[in-house]
Length: 132
Image (cartoon, rainbow, N blue to C red; front, side, top):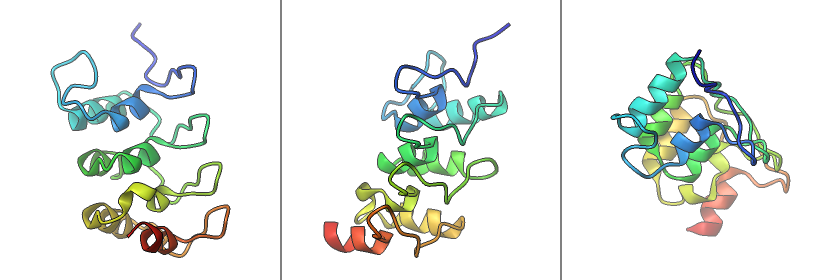
């Protein structure tokens, strides 16, 4: 049999989390771009909604790393746009979105709710205003 595509490491990250976080062209030992790696993992039943120890999904990780192409690969079918982590932050709440309109528009077009609040009752707009 093959490797378990949903195996978690010590901080509960799956290979899909790692691919979503990678800034390198090749995230795994195969000759494919990160987007292709994500598509290959999804094809082999990688869980797009797997949670790490902070309850973040691969989509949260891609959002935090401004990985727009990877987010596009994660979004089409299986990933839930409005899933919250431990602090009730959703992908749209990620602080690193400030000034990155392509990513914000992508999430909004896929159904992300701009009015949801995190644990401290902050909406994504609060974070955008605070961070400029």
